[in-house]
Amino acid sequence: MKDIETIMRLAPVIPVIVIDEVSHAVPLAEALVAGGLRALEVTLRTPQALDAIRAMKQVEGAIVGAGTVTNTQQLDDALEAGSEFIVSPGLTEPLARAAIDRNTAFLPGIANASDIMRGLDLGLNHFKFFPAAAAGGLPALKALTAPFNQCRFCPTGGINIQNAPEWLSLAPVLCVGGSWLAPDGPPDAVKIKAMAQEAMELRL
Image 1 (cartoon, one colour):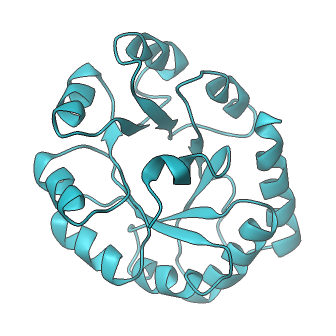
Image 2 (image 1 turned 135 degrees about the horizontal axis):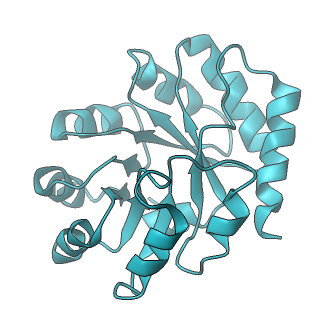
């Protein structure tokens, strides 16, 4: 099993994916992986999410995780479906301890210093900065990285192809999360592969 830092370093962007139709899952994953993006976060925002994770797991090269995990039951459901990493919008002690107990690659959400301190107390130092734009944007994250320079971050929320390079220029930012790579509707494989390739070039 890969640790969370290894997963965060696979590519500059982790696509944040909402699946409404399970039939879209494999073509979308295939196009993203073909473009170089292997770590795929499927959010548990729809009833189809767990089946989508199971389907995407069959795509060669894909490392599929679950996002929007907010409690222990969702954590266990996601792991049972084959999730290789878990992303949460926030940080609670019960969820964090469950993820640690299950030896899970875990990326909890933080928005301020208190969140980070709670994570550090639990032995965590890799975080999703969320909601990135609404929580103060790049100036806020820059301010947080000064006292918490041992931490690494994946900003998510309000990130797009235009502003991603600015976020990625901050050394403690290992990657960003982005939903623009998985637009609504049936996946256009050619377009999605091209967008994934463009995202891969953000740090070249």
